[in-house]
Each structure stands twice: as C-alpha cells, then as structure tokens.
Image 1 (tube, one colour):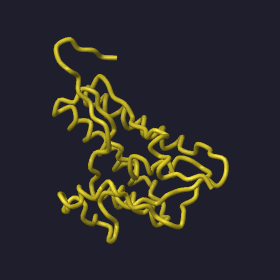
Image 2 (image 1 turned 135 degrees about the vertical axis):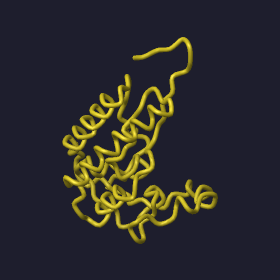
Image 3 (image 1 turned 30 degrees about the vertical axis):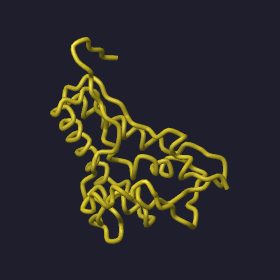
Length: 176
C-alpha cells in the first residue's frame, strides 16, 4: 500500500458517468436483451482506459474502473448472482428527489426512450427464489483485466475495483 507523509492521497468511490453508447447497451439488460457482446466489451475496455487516464490526470492517486461494466453500483448483483428473479413491483428511491429538482438535465431521459439516465432512480427489486450462487466470474475476470490494462497504460501505482456491500443491496434484494 502506498503511503505519503507529504500529502493526503486521494481516491474516490462510485460510478463515473457512463457515455450514452454504454448506457444503451446496459439498457438492453432491462428489456432482456443480451448486452455482453464484443462491442460492449470493447466499449467498456476503452472507457475504463479513458476513465483511469482522466482520474490520474486530475490527481487521483488510487483509481478505479468507474464501474462502466455495471448497470449501477448495486443493481449489478442481479447480473452476477444466480437464484434471483425480479419482483413484480419496482422500487422508486426517495433519496433522489432533491437531486432531481436541482439537476433535472442530468436526470432526464437517456438515449433510450423512457429510461432515466441515472438508473438508480427507479430500481427493479430482485427476490431470492432459490439458493444464491455466484455466476459473475467471467464478468469479474473482464473487470480485473480491463483495470489492470488501464492502470499499466496510465502508469498508475494503485487501483481497486469497487464492490457493493451486502448491507447496501439488502434494500433491493428481498428473500422470497
């Protein structure tokens, strides 16, 4: 772990804004489409590399992958866990209300009609209907490879992959 006695090292937590073409591919997931295509994988790889360069360029010491491969910081668990099914009723987050009023242009529709740019406003809640199992090994391997390549190309010393805590997903994951 890198340490400094001269200054506070800087990192950040969270999803970086996703470009419209990645949002469109991730939006396919909401309609049951296959979004894990070669075009999606190439777009994510390119955006992770650009995101790492941007983070390093503004002085972030410990970068992350921007979570470009994920639908949102917590909803991606439904892509990577088996044993889940969507519930019939979506969840609308009350914590986004003030932000929606202050930044309506950001929360406007994305390039996909009817899909809000910030997918966290209206969530599909998933329920556990059978024993949970991890199904995201390929996606995780791609995330690791993309971040390692971006870090090496940018000459960054430290990086991490963000992951949602179980205490956060329990709001959107019910036990049926």
